[in-house]
Image (cartoon, rainbow, N blue to C red; front, side, top):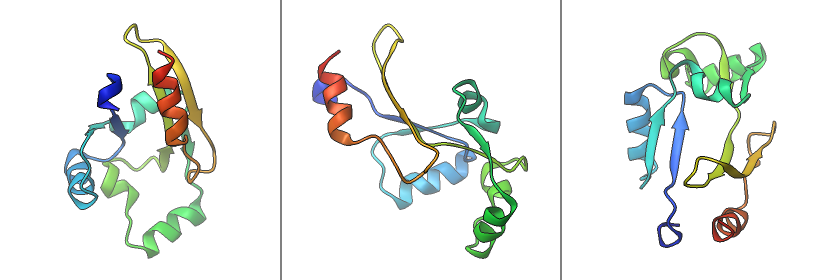
Length: 115
């Protein structure tokens, strides 16, 4: 992506320490920015309420969303991908309510090449 003049950045609701742990654990080579209380995600219309049964399931896995994200709203952002040009215009976007679906890397590269 760098060869196409692009920079990859992730935006996460995780607290800075939790984000650092995620970066280290997954050996990420890009910046992860903190979106406290989903302020940015909310502006993009990406925030959803985590159902009680899913919160309980996360807890059984040892995932405390409130502690991890520093707030107890029970809200998370949908994963989304945006290709934004140098003028700040979104040229490609992808978001799906099914959090396991992501924009295909080939589609990201194609969008970058079209800039």
